[in-house]
Image (cartoon, rainbow, N blue to C red; front, top):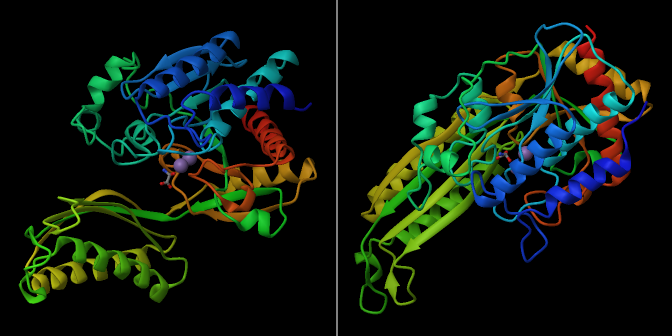
Length: 406
Ligand code: HGY
Ligand code: MN
Ligand code: MN
């Protein structure tokens, strides 16, 4: 029994058409109109597949397929919100492949012992509202619902009101469905599988994530008349922080990565020394001790930089997640499915954050990766060969059946 290639690729195409950008990317920021349209389309597909739909108080969507017994279900799924100008597979692959598994079981009249659930988690990307993986984090009890609903974006729009506006402020308490196991199919978003010419990643752990927002307050001044030693230059400090974290990652090595994704200067004018810088720093490492070391070294650098440049530097944590190990039994079950279907695979660490890392707090969890062409993601060029998409979805099908018949 195999999933239908045509249906799977067609659904991915339909979903990709919602929120397309000028560069043929996808922009479905959490709780935006485009996210609503995507949600409506997925709910339509779930209804057509005969799933019972529940929406929880943070807007997570669950499509439930009854099993032979009314016992804790096996769950799969991911997210359909995207980064600003992302690709059409990040998150969407896991949701659409989950629906394809359901349709394949329907057409083969197979009813598993356990119910099956396909989940769409709210705000996985954390681009508009932080932290990321917010919907699954609240669901797993790792973040207070009211605090999440009160989060605001950079236009001071409130998450809870946006949820109401798009019609996805559900009433099901978060965490109401407690699965027996969870598997997420996702693109690797990195270069490893393609470089090693391996079809599938069996993800056994996921690195720690530290997101910090930094505000540098200096003094606007004339670019021509202000001597260098009298400047309180927020722009220079933002640049110094950016090069510091880049060099820090090189120095620590051992998988340490560091990214300054946002730098906004004020007044952002050619002949004015910047008075203010707003920036974000993303540090990650699979080794928590190294990640803590990186955070501490960044902190001491910020204190020294402020003293030496007469500026005030405030930093606040936007997200902090320890590295996660996935469930050994689920990892080997996925490996067995890959073996049975004669696909090459390797165990690996996830460099990206995923809803699965939050689901691992509530039930045995693991992930399946498919290769990313040129290792590119969070970019309109994000792509995966159709054969690899099929391989991932078929291993998901067989793994879910195995789990749901346990
Ligand atoms: O940031 C991440 O790793 C994920 O894409 N939210
Ligand atoms: Mn993702
Ligand atoms: Mn992503």
